[in-house]
Image (cartoon, rainbow, N blue to C red; front, side, top):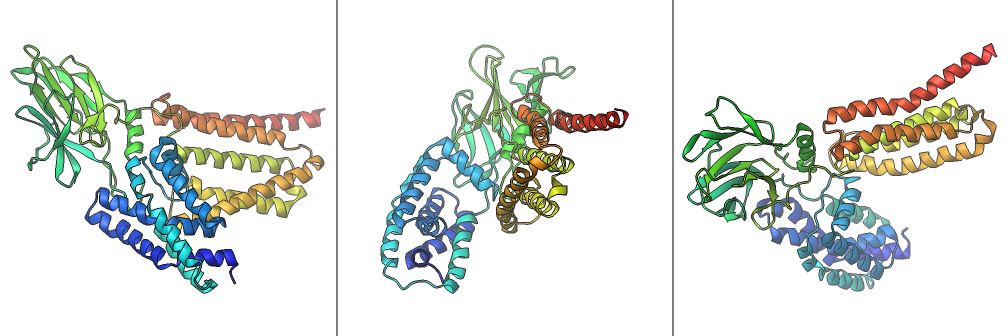
Length: 480
């Protein structure tokens, strides 16, 4: 038997308007977006989601319907209009499903859909109460519709460059409806859609028009352009992104949706050289760098990275940053947490807490470890099973953590050591493992392999010191 408030929430969730929105959300995300990608199908999901979210929030949060509608509208506005809101939503959603949510103020056009949700609530309040069997059917469908979004598309990838008259044309994949290239007619200063129905074969090298000894070439598999001024006898680096930063960029462009197509790796694919006004030998170079967009050498010799802009061109502002402290290292963060928890539990065992409460401490420590493991380990199961495992891990980790704290608080006065030293070692271990990767995200060290080596050395330093100290104390004990 459900409570009265839950029954009304279920009636709201089962109202024909809400059910229709559920059907639209599922059909749009899993069929229509794949057939007709674009702003229409994108906004349609927002409209349907705003109708479904308030009754689901009322049911799960046990809040009044007006509060659920207001909360939904407020959170939707923050996510769609602020970078911080989008990042927070991406982080929270990625705890369950790898996701990337982008702020887009134009999505606010869907907010009037909350009026439909309000209308459905007013009508549902006059309907008969919903019983538990109906709840078992309607709630999982609603949760699935809200969380099971359509497969994300891979990041666009610049694959070839060509000079077409006065234009430099960059072809990209996957093509959009009505356009498959972007072009510049002013030496790479501004860019626009290019709709000419023609494909361009990628060329890995090109020479300055009228100067066959002055040429450029890309290095396959790298973000790198080499230059020669003696007809190819010697080559020097004209532009490059280090291997460590390229690894960083690959993480940014990686398609986080396990059901979506994988994105291309960031690497120089092709280039073109165009003569421009400014004297003899004046030229620009445009390089197609896969999902990283293009690199452009202007007539003065200055190189710039330009990312895919939403207006149909490329811009320096749209280029992904080569460093961003704390970003793209969620896996390393959870691994550091898991290692630190293991060190803490082993330290507390050494301090005698397991002997004082073997069952309580053992069960609590096991629950804590098992609950955190799905967040640190790569998903073994496909969606939605991986989501279920992570959802189940949250209460396990909370219960285990509380259990360990209770055993610690109750028995710390009766053990040889109170456990404070073990806690400090665990904190130091976390810092030792995590900080090198935090530094790598900030560009120092540049190589990911160096960060791994530092994490192993620094992470082992505190536990190693504690073990060595205890061994020395045991040796001194009998002698004393």
